[in-house]
Image (cartoon, rainbow, N blue to C red; front, side):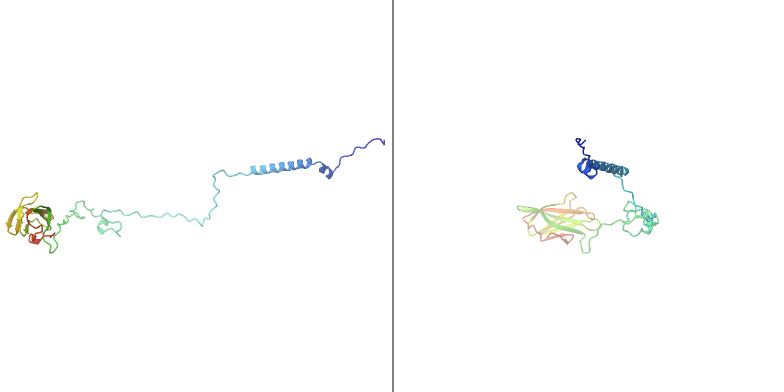
Length: 230
Protein backbone atom coordinates (compact mmCIF):
# COMPACT_ATOMS: atom_id res chain seq x y z
CA UNK A 1 0.00 0.00 0.00
CA UNK A 2 2.84 2.24 -0.45
CA UNK A 3 1.28 3.63 -3.56
CA UNK A 4 -1.85 5.22 -1.73
CA UNK A 5 -1.80 8.95 -0.65
CA UNK A 6 -3.05 9.97 2.78
CA UNK A 7 -5.77 12.75 2.92
CA UNK A 8 -4.69 15.52 5.30
CA UNK A 9 -7.01 16.13 8.33
CA UNK A 10 -8.57 19.60 8.89
CA UNK A 11 -6.86 21.61 11.57
CA UNK A 12 -8.50 21.99 14.99
CA UNK A 13 -8.48 24.74 17.75
CA UNK A 14 -7.22 28.27 17.20
CA UNK A 15 -5.88 27.40 13.83
CA UNK A 16 -9.40 26.50 12.66
CA UNK A 17 -10.81 29.82 13.91
CA UNK A 18 -8.05 31.78 12.26
CA UNK A 19 -8.63 30.02 9.01
CA UNK A 20 -12.51 30.50 9.24
CA UNK A 21 -13.31 34.28 9.93
CA UNK A 22 -17.06 33.82 9.30
CA UNK A 23 -17.28 32.05 12.62
CA UNK A 24 -16.19 35.28 14.44
CA UNK A 25 -18.62 37.40 12.45
CA UNK A 26 -21.50 35.06 13.19
CA UNK A 27 -20.74 35.07 16.93
CA UNK A 28 -20.71 38.91 16.96
CA UNK A 29 -24.07 39.10 15.21
CA UNK A 30 -25.60 36.69 17.72
CA UNK A 31 -24.29 38.79 20.65
CA UNK A 32 -25.71 42.03 19.16
CA UNK A 33 -29.15 40.47 18.61
CA UNK A 34 -29.22 39.28 22.23
CA UNK A 35 -28.29 42.73 23.53
CA UNK A 36 -30.96 44.35 21.34
CA UNK A 37 -33.65 42.00 22.66
CA UNK A 38 -32.64 42.76 26.25
CA UNK A 39 -32.74 46.52 25.62
CA UNK A 40 -36.21 46.37 24.02
CA UNK A 41 -37.55 44.38 26.94
CA UNK A 42 -36.20 46.91 29.44
CA UNK A 43 -37.66 49.85 27.43
CA UNK A 44 -41.10 48.26 27.24
CA UNK A 45 -41.05 47.64 30.95
CA UNK A 46 -40.88 51.37 31.62
CA UNK A 47 -44.17 53.38 31.72
CA UNK A 48 -43.38 56.89 30.48
CA UNK A 49 -45.65 59.66 31.68
CA UNK A 50 -48.17 60.99 29.12
CA UNK A 51 -47.57 64.30 27.41
CA UNK A 52 -48.45 67.33 29.56
CA UNK A 53 -48.63 65.33 32.81
CA UNK A 54 -47.33 67.13 35.87
CA UNK A 55 -44.83 65.40 38.15
CA UNK A 56 -46.28 64.37 41.47
CA UNK A 57 -46.19 67.13 44.05
CA UNK A 58 -43.91 66.63 46.95
CA UNK A 59 -45.62 66.36 50.30
CA UNK A 60 -45.50 69.58 52.33
CA UNK A 61 -44.88 69.25 56.05
CA UNK A 62 -47.99 70.06 58.03
CA UNK A 63 -46.03 72.48 60.22
CA UNK A 64 -45.39 74.81 57.25
CA UNK A 65 -49.01 75.28 56.14
CA UNK A 66 -50.82 77.72 58.39
CA UNK A 67 -54.49 76.95 59.02
CA UNK A 68 -56.89 79.40 57.38
CA UNK A 69 -58.78 81.35 60.05
CA UNK A 70 -61.88 83.22 58.85
CA UNK A 71 -61.65 86.88 59.70
CA UNK A 72 -64.62 89.19 60.01
CA UNK A 73 -64.41 92.37 57.88
CA UNK A 74 -66.53 95.26 59.20
CA UNK A 75 -69.00 96.54 56.63
CA UNK A 76 -68.44 100.16 55.53
CA UNK A 77 -70.57 102.79 57.16
CA UNK A 78 -73.41 104.18 54.98
CA UNK A 79 -72.55 107.37 53.13
CA UNK A 80 -74.86 110.26 53.96
CA UNK A 81 -75.44 113.25 51.66
CA UNK A 82 -73.18 116.18 52.44
CA UNK A 83 -70.78 114.11 54.55
CA UNK A 84 -67.21 113.89 53.31
CA UNK A 85 -65.53 110.48 53.16
CA UNK A 86 -62.49 111.96 54.89
CA UNK A 87 -64.42 112.87 58.05
CA UNK A 88 -63.28 111.03 61.17
CA UNK A 89 -66.83 110.33 62.27
CA UNK A 90 -70.46 111.17 61.67
CA UNK A 91 -72.03 114.10 63.48
CA UNK A 92 -74.23 113.23 66.46
CA UNK A 93 -77.35 114.22 64.55
CA UNK A 94 -76.57 111.74 61.74
CA UNK A 95 -75.71 108.96 64.21
CA UNK A 96 -79.04 109.48 65.95
CA UNK A 97 -80.95 109.11 62.70
CA UNK A 98 -81.94 112.75 62.19
CA UNK A 99 -83.82 114.00 59.16
CA UNK A 100 -81.79 114.10 55.94
CA UNK A 101 -81.06 117.55 54.45
CA UNK A 102 -83.88 118.92 52.34
CA UNK A 103 -83.44 119.82 48.68
CA UNK A 104 -85.07 123.21 49.39
CA UNK A 105 -82.24 125.69 50.20
CA UNK A 106 -84.59 127.63 52.52
CA UNK A 107 -85.19 124.57 54.75
CA UNK A 108 -82.49 123.53 57.20
CA UNK A 109 -81.55 119.96 58.27
CA UNK A 110 -84.00 120.12 61.21
CA UNK A 111 -86.95 120.96 58.94
CA UNK A 112 -87.08 124.61 60.03
CA UNK A 113 -86.72 127.44 57.46
CA UNK A 114 -83.17 128.76 57.33
CA UNK A 115 -82.14 132.34 56.74
CA UNK A 116 -81.77 133.23 53.07
CA UNK A 117 -78.66 134.93 51.76
CA UNK A 118 -79.08 138.64 51.32
CA UNK A 119 -77.60 140.53 48.35
CA UNK A 120 -74.01 141.65 48.76
CA UNK A 121 -73.69 144.94 50.59
CA UNK A 122 -71.46 147.77 49.48
CA UNK A 123 -68.07 147.80 51.13
CA UNK A 124 -67.48 150.52 53.75
CA UNK A 125 -66.67 153.76 51.97
CA UNK A 126 -68.03 152.51 48.61
CA UNK A 127 -71.03 154.37 47.20
CA UNK A 128 -74.31 152.46 46.89
CA UNK A 129 -74.56 153.40 43.19
CA UNK A 130 -71.29 153.29 41.25
CA UNK A 131 -70.75 154.72 37.74
CA UNK A 132 -68.13 154.32 34.97
CA UNK A 133 -67.63 156.80 32.14
CA UNK A 134 -66.57 155.88 28.59
CA UNK A 135 -66.83 157.07 24.97
CA UNK A 136 -68.99 154.69 22.90
CA UNK A 137 -68.52 156.29 19.47
CA UNK A 138 -66.58 159.24 18.12
CA UNK A 139 -67.23 161.06 14.83
CA UNK A 140 -66.51 164.41 13.14
CA UNK A 141 -67.86 167.19 15.30
CA UNK A 142 -69.10 165.10 18.22
CA UNK A 143 -69.25 161.81 20.11
CA UNK A 144 -71.56 159.44 22.01
CA UNK A 145 -70.72 159.07 25.70
CA UNK A 146 -72.02 156.65 28.35
CA UNK A 147 -72.22 156.39 32.13
CA UNK A 148 -72.81 152.75 33.18
CA UNK A 149 -74.14 152.35 36.75
CA UNK A 150 -74.52 149.40 39.16
CA UNK A 151 -76.62 149.30 42.34
CA UNK A 152 -74.45 147.67 45.05
CA UNK A 153 -76.91 148.31 47.88
CA UNK A 154 -79.59 145.98 49.26
CA UNK A 155 -82.61 148.01 48.15
CA UNK A 156 -83.95 149.52 44.94
CA UNK A 157 -82.95 153.12 44.41
CA UNK A 158 -83.01 155.96 41.92
CA UNK A 159 -79.92 157.81 40.72
CA UNK A 160 -78.68 161.20 39.52
CA UNK A 161 -75.86 161.81 37.03
CA UNK A 162 -74.01 165.13 36.76
CA UNK A 163 -71.68 165.79 33.75
CA UNK A 164 -69.65 168.97 33.22
CA UNK A 165 -67.92 169.97 29.94
CA UNK A 166 -65.85 172.96 28.84
CA UNK A 167 -68.10 174.32 26.09
CA UNK A 168 -69.91 172.18 23.58
CA UNK A 169 -73.62 171.50 23.14
CA UNK A 170 -75.80 168.65 24.39
CA UNK A 171 -77.91 167.20 21.58
CA UNK A 172 -79.87 164.47 23.44
CA UNK A 173 -79.77 161.93 26.29
CA UNK A 174 -81.52 158.56 26.71
CA UNK A 175 -81.72 155.35 28.74
CA UNK A 176 -82.55 152.25 26.68
CA UNK A 177 -85.49 150.04 27.61
CA UNK A 178 -86.79 152.01 30.64
CA UNK A 179 -88.91 155.12 31.20
CA UNK A 180 -86.93 158.29 30.63
CA UNK A 181 -86.02 160.65 33.42
CA UNK A 182 -85.70 164.44 33.57
CA UNK A 183 -82.77 166.56 32.41
CA UNK A 184 -81.60 170.01 33.56
CA UNK A 185 -79.06 171.81 31.37
CA UNK A 186 -76.62 174.48 32.47
CA UNK A 187 -73.79 176.45 30.89
CA UNK A 188 -71.13 173.93 32.00
CA UNK A 189 -73.02 170.65 31.46
CA UNK A 190 -76.25 168.89 32.48
CA UNK A 191 -77.87 166.88 35.28
CA UNK A 192 -79.97 163.77 34.61
CA UNK A 193 -82.41 162.38 37.22
CA UNK A 194 -83.59 158.80 36.68
CA UNK A 195 -87.22 158.02 35.89
CA UNK A 196 -87.06 154.43 37.30
CA UNK A 197 -85.33 152.76 40.22
CA UNK A 198 -82.61 150.12 39.87
CA UNK A 199 -83.06 146.86 41.81
CA UNK A 200 -80.28 145.54 44.13
CA UNK A 201 -77.41 144.26 42.02
CA UNK A 202 -79.00 145.66 38.84
CA UNK A 203 -77.37 147.97 36.29
CA UNK A 204 -78.42 150.76 33.93
CA UNK A 205 -76.63 152.95 31.35
CA UNK A 206 -77.17 156.61 30.50
CA UNK A 207 -76.03 157.69 27.01
CA UNK A 208 -75.73 161.18 25.56
CA UNK A 209 -74.77 162.94 22.32
CA UNK A 210 -72.38 165.92 22.61
CA UNK A 211 -71.15 168.27 19.85
CA UNK A 212 -67.97 170.38 19.78
CA UNK A 213 -66.93 169.21 23.25
CA UNK A 214 -63.93 167.42 24.72
CA UNK A 215 -64.29 163.67 25.04
CA UNK A 216 -63.14 163.90 28.66
CA UNK A 217 -65.56 165.81 30.89
CA UNK A 218 -64.36 168.10 33.64
CA UNK A 219 -66.57 166.29 36.09
CA UNK A 220 -68.70 163.15 36.25
CA UNK A 221 -70.59 162.05 39.38
CA UNK A 222 -73.34 159.53 40.25
CA UNK A 223 -75.27 160.49 43.38
CA UNK A 224 -72.34 162.78 44.21
CA UNK A 225 -69.64 160.04 43.88
CA UNK A 226 -66.94 160.45 41.21
CA UNK A 227 -67.24 158.24 38.12
CA UNK A 228 -64.62 155.62 37.31
CA UNK A 229 -62.85 155.50 33.94
CA UNK A 230 -61.64 159.11 33.90
